[in-house]
Figure: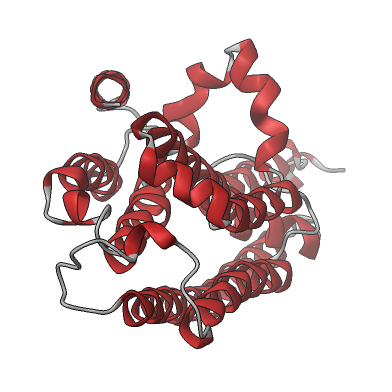
Length: 295
């Protein structure tokens, strides 16, 4: 896993360097986000949370949230279309692109979440290091794919607007909160491996399980509020940018549909459409007959 992270980091750095100084350069904030994800993925197993995951379900929950939510989100926020363009030409990656469809991504995330918390699979991850590694890789993959459908630079379906994104976020967070409720209000422990372990927090197995569920619910609620705020801000910003494009087009006598300006605002390509409107306006002025030459 460390070797894989090194390869990914070097490839990212080289691509960022190749785009530097061009119109497609990667902003420093995105680079910081990507490298922060790498730090989280490397630091997590080296921190006390890593060893404690075998002794406490709460620690194990924190581990999964750091990998599957925080690191995955930070890595997605560090990507741009031009940055991953060479990767998309790879036939294997191209074949996997349908997985980033919002409906597929959310279904994969929920299925992965619930399957790995079945006692038989969770117990196997505690007993066998190889299964534990697979578990972590799938949590990160499912989280990355889930965030990619929401924040990623890949083209999104036309129907996946702000309202659809709202339902997407609600679906993901409700699935997590429901599972957290199961752990909080359960009267019995589900993972017998923790019953004989020396809990680092001094909690009983049942209290540890309830705390893990509460942590899961709290994290999901906090993320939900942040995403809702982002979504409302995004909707307001897109509406304003779309109206500015419409006003610019009307000012120059250029025909442009509301749907096109809305797509440009949603895709973050308002500057490009603004340039095209100005160019078409200039072409109209150039091609207009000179009144002094008219009979």
